[in-house]
Image (cartoon, rainbow, N blue to C red; front, top):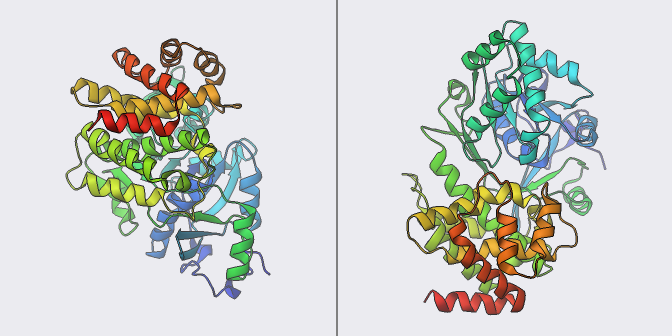
Length: 454
């Protein structure tokens, strides 16, 4: 069967392809982080824009850790399929918004040229949390400096990562990276580069060769860059100059992203991480199989509704109970095959905003937080049980988490240099839950939790 490319595209009739002329698409977006999430999320929104007749939002997507993804995509002329799947219903669509794929630093000069082009209006980002403390600031500074030297048309940098106030955070790391640059360049950045906060949401599990083979058999062409994702997709951005050009994209522009961000990070990401650690402790490979157990789904529901939803101010147009229900339904989608091991990575970078601040806010409001404290204890128990740990603080976390004294384990782990730390007054209840997890079955611990909260 044919492999997807521009030459084979006209012969593919089983899946909807781009409705626009690929040759007339201009690169208006430089995206840092060419992973599955970008291809299933931002690139689809930009594909919507192109389908609506605005040809100025083609994407050059940049892989930063390995050239493999960029080169595989380039072999298909940067065409690929996003297969939205919800149980038995599939809605595949060929995406053409990515017109170039690059690898940093191999293609550094090409990226400098693009960054210098006044037609480039956006730099978007999907990278790991730790990349903001490593290579990303310097690379963005390099690109911005090249734009500054060639006249410097204004542009926006939009982080699409699960970081609180991600635009403000990106602004701060760039300020730090350019601290020793000329005052003229620093003034230009402040005057010409915008950093609107944004929030993104879509479940995009890692692709497998089996999925690629199954898709080929069903739809009649091979796509080595195939993406499977849930149908749901959301992108919320604070009002910005670019929004008039993105009408019809499906992106929502609001005055403040913060309440939407908190709702998503706490009600979805906090739960997703908790399920991942439960799955790892129970030797369950996929998240959907974890939440399918009624005892765990009940725990998650009560944690969402009775605790997490009470920890922040609700967005005006969002019903949190309906939103929480929708999240549980999405996570339960068995076709996504979202691995618990994948979600469990980098907990020290994720949990401060997903669980720690939630627990702190509940304590400050004198509201119940036993389920959130148990979720934190579940993570700490996982740290002590895991044979391998993929985390920037792996050595320290594993050293402290293996202490036989549960309180010492909690104190040692939770005093490490996280972005946000747990209130020390919560160490005692977290230690109690950790001690119970170490000495009893999970099911008995959950029964204790429910009995105490009756």
